[in-house]
Length: 61
Image 1 (cartoon, helix red, strand yellow):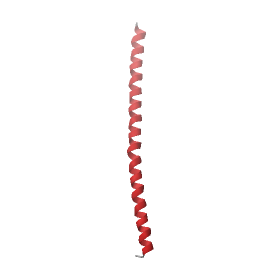
Image 2: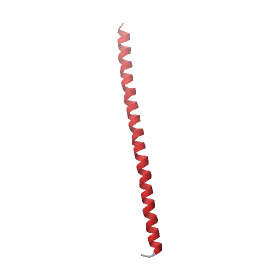
Image 3: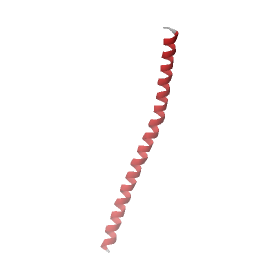
Image 4: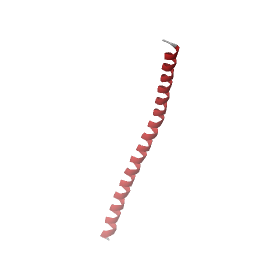
């Protein structure tokens, strides 16, 4: 293998490793944001149900 081909190979490997590291940094963050959004939606749904129950109870009196 020539020196130039070896340098190109080494550069490609380094770029691949860096891209994988940056990808792994993004994925947990994205997953965490998605999980937070799901929790927020579930909480909003629960609050709407409680509000609906309260409004039904209030209307009965």
